[in-house]
Image (cartoon, rainbow, N blue to C red; front, side, top):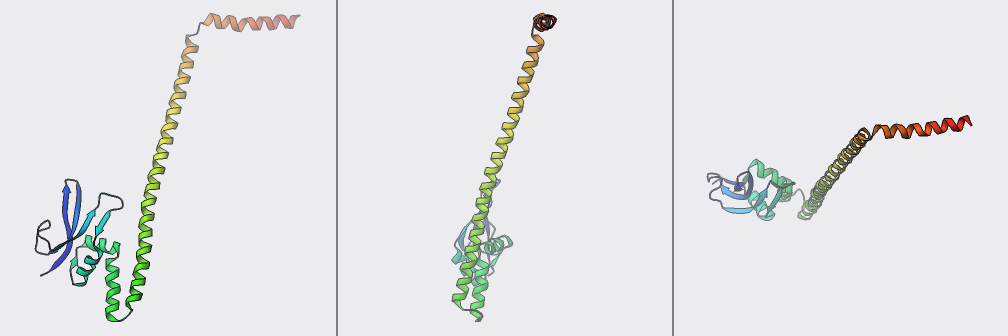
Length: 181
């Protein structure tokens, strides 16, 4: 019996989530399975992968073949690297302690990288939101200034013209009289 580690679709239309399952290769995609290893949600950024790493490792060691997508997920989370190290231990190339040290060092580095991506996405989102708010404020201020200038122009156009002329002529006449004296 050929055993596969693959995804079984769940969720509603255009909002899929998947179960990571171990199933007979002949079984339907969403049909009968041997064991459920975890879940995968591609809707989040970064995608959420929750699974039992020990059971996935067990099935990989017993010969279960992952599909391409599941292989990528298992590689991303370190199951394939752990299998690689365990095969080295079985062949006698390295000891179990060395393999465990290498895997834990890799796992710490990978977790830090994933957390860095998460915080980077949050920071980028906050920065983009602040930039959008600043741009919107700038546009709002420009519109308000344009409205002020338009209102001032309307007031100047609607102001009584003779009163404005008398006011400008009176100081001019006083200036000429003062100059004559």
